[in-house]
Amino acid sequence: MATDITPAPPLADAAAAPPDAAPSPETRALAQRHDGITPDRQRVFLEALAATGSVAEAARQAGASRQAFYACRNRDAGRDFGTAWDHALSLATEQLCDVAYERALYGVEEPVFYHGEQIGTRRRYNDRLLMMLLRVRGGVDYATLSEQRAWMGVTVTPAPSFERRVRRLGGRRRTRGG
Image (cartoon, rainbow, N blue to C red; front, top):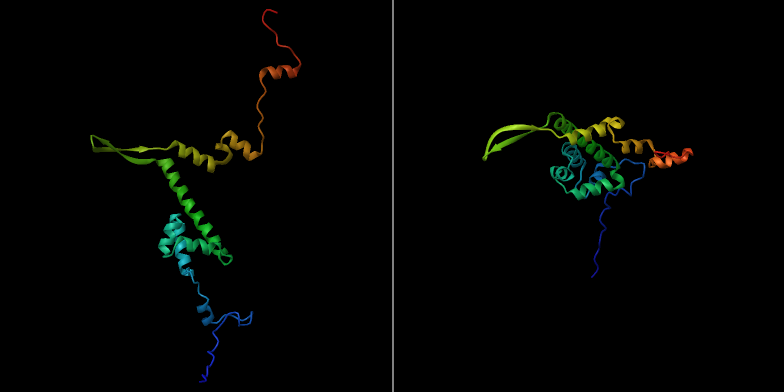
């Protein structure tokens, strides 16, 4: 028994199209990402990352896994996405710096309790936070001496003892009574 098989029409294939031809809407539809990280999801992810600084939270808001976004970032085709990711983290870091400055300048209000009841509040300031911000943002003026030397490329050798300095001068130390 012979069966006549008619071949199916070929699928629209991006490889079959000439290289200089613009992809058709059908080809674009076939070429959609298989991981679900669409441009809209990328946009939601990047906006959430800039707002929160948290990859996990941004991925949750975009409706995909952290791993999917990391994979998208690490692909050659994801270079623009990776650059935008870095920029979003920079924006989030700037917001953290703003919060740190407010805490350093204005302190944090804390409740005060006595015998289990809140009787008031106090404002607590963090001098270490203030000094760190001055060192980071104030540059050389507020840096420690070792940081200043490192920035200037200065190698520090230990200071010679008083005895060694005197010997270098070629003189002798006078002793009392003699």
